[in-house]
Image 1: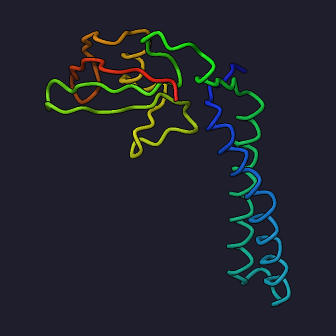
Image 2 (image 1 turned 90 degrees about the vertical axis):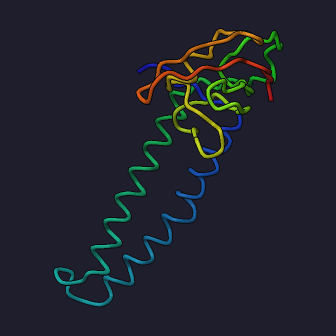
Length: 158
């Protein structure tokens, strides 16, 4: 299996989420199953079936996160010297030429991306179009929604 890039912050976040699933949610679900079992006939016990379904979802999420952490290549961008070049983990401020505004993106791994917070996956067309470029470069990125024109204003390793 190939290595999955992950920022140091993303690794910490995933470990916290895994800990919560294992030591908070899993015991709560086990308790809910035990309570539902105490109500009698399991064939017609909606609480029992709902708790078992939730247990399956939580166990799948635990497996997914554990697998991701095992296969993660954790990159601490603060240890990489800043050269003005966009790399994985960089926080990039660009000038959106088409919309006449500045936009800031942080390039992160798939499991930690949150576009609403400006954290975009390394696998998105925007991130791929920026990686390897330098401050003051003008770039045109092809996306499914059309072409985007940017000028890279600043690259930081935060």
